[in-house]
Image (cartoon, rainbow, N blue to C red):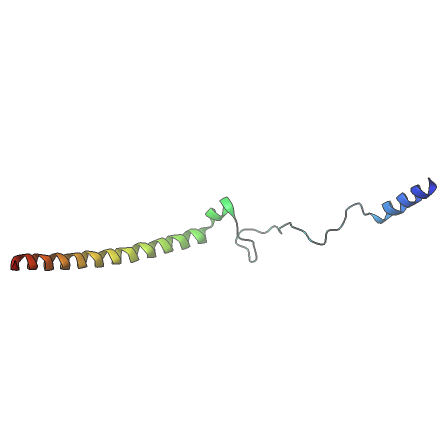
Length: 91
């Protein structure tokens, strides 16, 4: 019994009240936009003004590119229609 109580006291003395953790999963608190701040995820990711601006620029580029393609297709359709009309006149 004495042996067990001495052993328990020795083990208890080696333990710390707050054990040190060599690896931590806590993210340091930084304000949004600070250098080195983590990129927000989920709901907060939609609030970032840079990402909204970038998405708007991308959408504008895609719309203008599709408008150019559409104009080209309309031009080709008109040329094809003229060609078909000319072929019908010859028949």
